[in-house]
Image 1: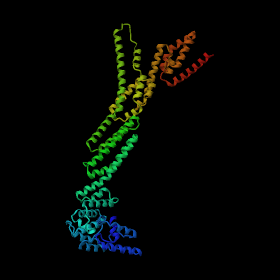
Image 2: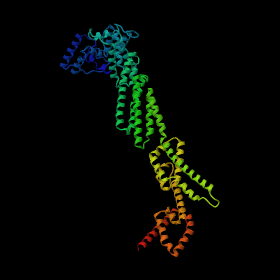
Image 3: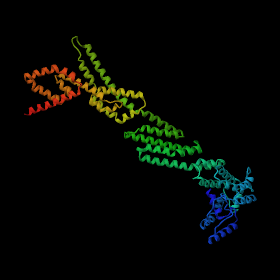
Image 4: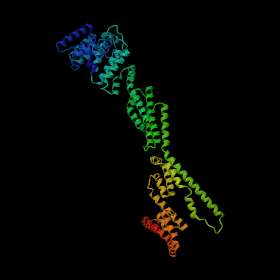
Length: 553
């Protein structure tokens, strides 16, 4: 132990109960030796200690350190004194390097005995020897011997042996001073749990003081970490999750140590744990709110849940535990929020569609009841009414605003397969009612499959409907098929050519008659052949270009 190896009494070359006369004599001797450069040795250098290198400065400092009564007591507890015949004999053995024999003498007068006027010095000397050991059991024995001496009524005898007889001392304060000094000596040598084990044989008063000493540092570190995290969180809520996670990690060991030392029922532990839990939880709340407001792509709900779970694992007080449980319950409800909102919106559209279809079917049913024998219902018209019973462009706009890509990403993470299945069915229903362009606008809804099949189906449906419309209106079958829209600008140009040129000549009228006779059958064969339709469009585009050129001339 460094405090014994470099004890001021050892450097001065005297025992701790040396008289004032002996002390002055030693001081003069050393001063004379240093003047002529002679090596300074002492009978009390003891072989059990490592070699010592005395200099004028170290000697001067040593004598200075043992001038005051309190300092004399402090340093004497880590050195030897000769206050009885037993000490005298044992110290002679110690001078000769026989530590075992010296300890045997001192143990004979102290083992299983209370402290008394004859053995108080032996108890101190045993303690000093034991503290020099590297064996933890010996060190533990040495600590217990020192504290036993200080707490006895004969500690006064020890004090008056090394200091003035008028000097009084507070036993409890001296115990605390001893513990403080020992903790400094052990700091870089043992971990906290090992240090506590060294003091495990001491009384309750010592244990309480140790608890206080050991709780101060971790409590301070935890409080500092909480304050640091709080400042960072308030300044940068975007990164509050990282701050909360780091706070939990950085305080985990200190909190665990406090728990093992003072237990969860201790008020200091409860306060620290609950403050820590509340800050970690608040990091999760702030991060969630900020991420939600900014529509973050991160899985912020899961991350907020993680922090709340960590907070709950730390919390001790009922209020803090309740708050953590409430937070987890709220987040669990919000976990399916996106899919619930999406289902609600899509379901409202399907309900509106179903209601509109029901009204149309009710009207058809009423008409059927009032129709005469030779009247019939135009079911083609009924189908068109059903297809346009809702303003699908408006529906697409509402859905695009109500369910964005971030919402769909959250839906993908949902673990509730029942809700996912319901969502998919509603999306399939919607895509079946939309046109290809409309499908493209909301294709992000269908994350589990490619929408091209739905778009192809919608395109085919539109073309079929358009061709049917062309037939009803006397339109251009093939052109409508090729361009996909009865009202396409190029189709309008071809109708203009038909009406303004072909229809005004006999040959032209014959061509029109031939076209309407055979083109529907040709359309049936070519309707779904995209490559052929592309060739037809290019041909018609060239024809229209020539037609415009002729008009200009």
